Length: 123
Image (cartoon, rainbow, N blue to C red; front, side):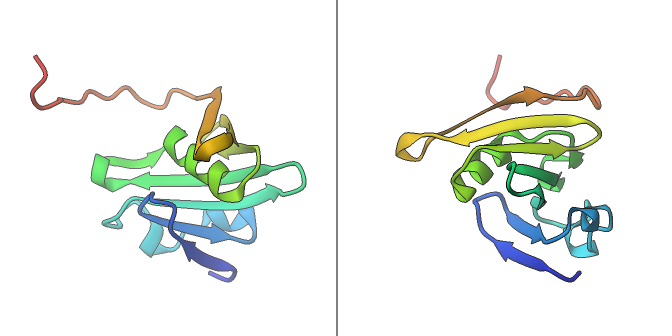
């Protein structure tokens, strides 16, 4: 895929695409069958801080995550400015870096499915 670059944000592998329309044709190495968790993102409107993102979490049993707040926090810290992330079928996350390496996130998330998880050691 042209314009593809890799960077580490502590999210597994992060792929950056120059054109958000390229996110519809995700390369096989970054798709849900990949062994590692991956985030793929592109500026949709860089001056306004709008990003289109896709996140695949096969290690957590999630083919594609509808909205990933932890990834939004790290991405806002990495780009060093407030961002609006459009992810999944209609989720919108707002994240911004704060002082001392912190960040905050909020937004609106589309319910895709309900999942149950067993936590080891919990009663």
